[in-house]
Image 1 (tube, one colour):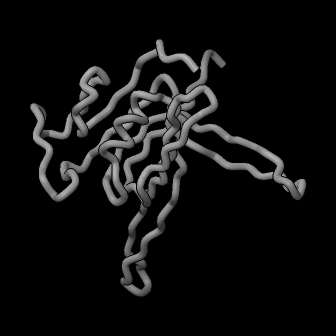
Image 2: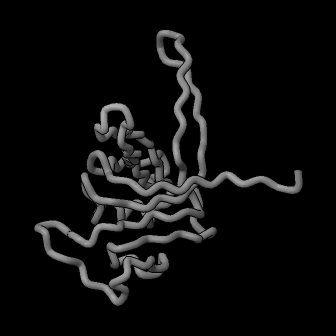
Length: 153
């Protein structure tokens, strides 16, 4: 195989406010709970059905985490682009656990797709189409994009 790709793209809603915690080195880590859903109409009963899938997203990029902490709230629609990672650990009862997470470290995107801020006011931007901004415009809550390879941890 010439190469491989580990890329996850999600568009969904935040199930709760982001959880922000500090790492041992003082950097911030954001954990997001993102819900995606699939809807269909049952042919036999003509009833509308829906299946919701929950995704755990962990952001290790401190600059992105600062913006997530300031602007992201429960219920908002977000675009997430990261890598899938499986983590294993053993608890105090010697039980093994596994969790799959979407991880954003150096490369990845976190975009706030809703244009409503706190109090229901609209955020105004130069791009009304919902297009993304580069990470250099950190004060713009519409979108955050990270391709910064200079962030150490």
